[in-house]
Length: 618
Image (cartoon, rainbow, N blue to C red; front, side, top):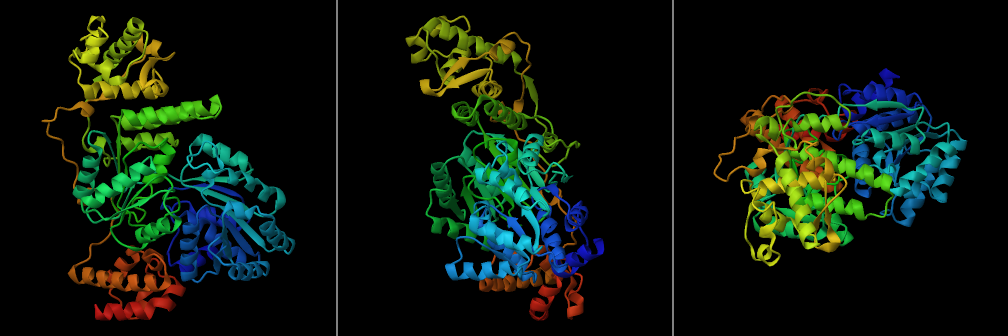
């Protein structure tokens, strides 16, 4: 089977060899085995089911059904397969009735190699009747369940309809299944196995490391100004995604970026469907667009040249953070994952967990996930080491995150934490009511405000005992205490601070609190500089000379016209890496194009002469 699958890889997709565990996965599934595949974004998950689908169709085993959660993803993947000469189709609401009936007839005759459909459609009686007919004739080759973390309640993108996919194994026990995801910790992985009945499946877990992505996390001070400095200083004119927690925030941030000259578009579920689609299409098809979005945007977005992902609000957990940041740098070139976070982020996330209607077991798991994300944000050691450790992977310091490039100083905040908790306790004891963070910090720092005088809190025994602590330091301490549950924020009583059962250990000094000094660095301190982009981790590639750059630009211009004609993103026609390889080789004949990565037989036949013509003109 290995020779068959290698031939498909070479002839259909134009790649000389498999990467990482791809060949083992492809051969196992092509031979009829079940698999659970965990592979990072950009690692080549799609080929892990597309090549077995082609191999099994060629062997007369029929149709592969791909369960996919998003219409946009179906459209682009089917477009890419058709470009490569593979008979693929999608069955979704964008098809009219005549097109739907035509496709169903072709499916019934097993004339399609892969069909993409959403989980809601797959479990309908009409679709199952189609599958029954195929199964009865031995023409149901494979089930591929993409974005499989959606089946787990512990995952960051839980979709209840995925739970119904268990019927595929129950109804068609002889049909192999492959479930794929880029993001799953041990708990989510176990849930996927149980929910999809994949106990006997082979598990393939690739490294979660994305070495080309530089991780940086900053304390929120002036978030919009920080974001603008990041974009203008590092990524002017480049494609990126900015994530915000609310629709209102998305609109505000997009407007601010537009006002600063950034080509930014908003995207959230509250926008008109046509507007959302237009903005997504522009992002996929044009260069240099920045999308400001809620997490409604991004799953399955295959755009390879996203140069940065920024979070202006803290996500719920590390899985969400990893999945979203993974949309940067899919082409292997240098990219950035930047996040700003603050005390209010921690308070909001904690409140959402506490106020959710879920049972206590679920809330405890979600609190643990939030704690892990906050630990990543407050970390003083390598971000990547902590990120990978969360997914059970050991690593060493990366040299390509903010902490490695500019190691922060650390201070022991245990005494400050005890003073802060003591102040909360004594103020509540004296006044009988709770107070907010700002007032508690004023008391601790010895500031005589109108409110302090009104409640006579200058007489509290802890008044002024934290005069040496800055507000930034105390906010950093508060973030840690809120995140670990050592202090609670009562949203129903004006965000007042309250002690919890977890306060006792901190008050007794049994739990050390160590924080990064950089969060409270004096304004005059000169920041350490990070590596220039040219020195960051990136795939090795021979640089193009001036004629090569000119040819590369000409090829990109030609590709844009082709993509527009076909109504597809440009990277579906050819990736930048393929165009760069063509520009470097400067071919004169079709034989010269043979062996270029991404130039399969169908594309060579379809575009070879046009490419040569561009090269001759260039």
